[in-house]
Image 1 (cartoon, helix red, strand yellow):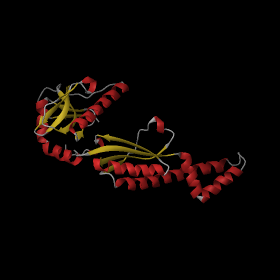
Image 2 (image 1 turned 180 degrees about the vertical axis):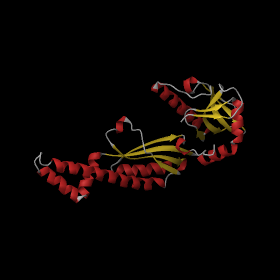
Image 3 (image 1 turned 90 degrees about the vertical axis):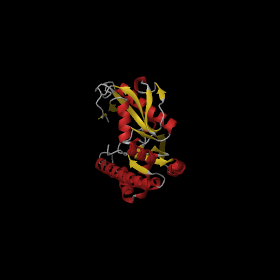
Image 4 (image 1 turned 135 degrees about the vertical axis):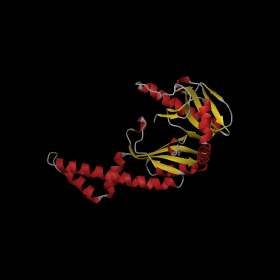
Length: 267
């Protein structure tokens, strides 16, 4: 998401790229760790600060996909570094730019101070974790055939028929198996959601989830983004271990800054 916030009367070419909001009253130079090695620093207002770098008040754009990905990774690295340094952060999405100078950023922080403080408190000691649960397609089909007598009979009948004559039956079996697998995955997803919910503050089911190469041969059952209090990470891990012992593959990553759970809707 590209966002430019107009809040000052300064020249339009001056801006501040915002990575996140933190609890800090200090003016700190965090070094040349930003996008394109930009110098990153804090702009404090009372007891909160914006982590920023100076830029022009226009979005970062390029036709080079690798370059854009480098920018996004740099953005995330700064947010991760701020989390390590300051603790709780309110992360902003890539390409959030304030029009104006540090003074304009201070004014923005002052006007939104109560909202930022409230959000920092809500997210305190919590982080985002990603959970992806997979099945082996062959094992899932075996389980379905074991439990569904009608499908088992159809499979037996199909195997006994000559290849040409059995084409329509094989196609029918394939379609019914596919429907049964989809239904089984939906049922499993509901069961897993119930098991995981008691260990997290908030949970979101991801409609599209990027899969690492190591998992391409597996079938994704469900993927979650979870907001988890630090005291509940171990219990969530135990719940996922139990799912893994039942024969499913679990990918559990984090902690990450809580990008999926920031609530600043009024802004």
